[in-house]
Image (tube, rainbow, N blue to C red; front, side, top):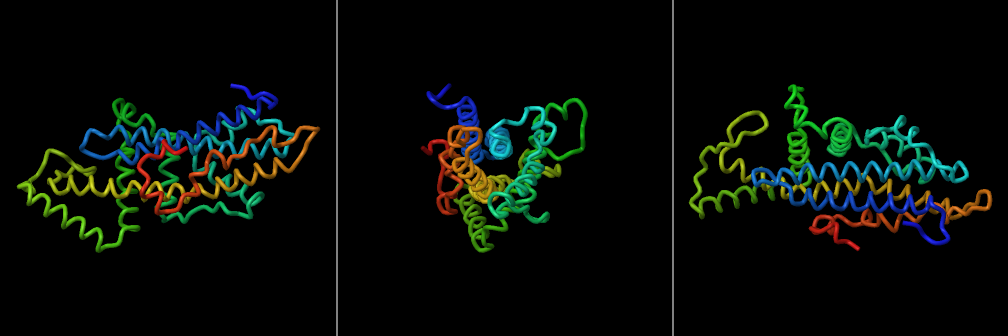
Length: 282
């Protein structure tokens, strides 16, 4: 699709921004629906796929736009992008720190290595570069590596504990036990096993589903917090391009206003947690 009076570069960057935007928003919808033991495992994988694609392309938009801004709006080659970054989200995030120092006074910062934020970036990077075919790879030869679902559970349960007060977690567990009693459900062992191979009780299964449900909006909020500075970086690059001119070609005819695509990164925590239909955002 072309725009009358605008260079091809503008159209291509615009389409890429749309792709990144919709990939990220749809991933939030998938992760909001995903859960264990409900035949909803596929939502996890769809969420991981779309999220890694969207975030990777969002950051590569920053890399490409910065390069164009510094090189008379000539784009880097596809080979340069693949050699420099591949699908490693953690490496790209580190490069965002460098670009941020140039354009936004260092708003992008690497999280502490012991934090859930850091583990989240590492998980996404590992999935994008290595674990996308985990299930099929395991069929051929066991790698003794944890599955993406196990790693996600570890992150989700940790985020849930960190950002949910103890008394609320206890209240939810008591309510779950009362609901089982009221329905006459005995807390017997099930056929389900946890990731360590131990049989789970009925309460274990329901409680795990509860944690996943309650942690989903918290994780989405953490993703938005982690990548909001990159949204600000893209916006700063857009403004720099619109205020410059090279060889008679103005930047506003080449680099779009990225704030028009990734505006949802400005959502506050309350709206992040209450939103159930991200892809329907205008």
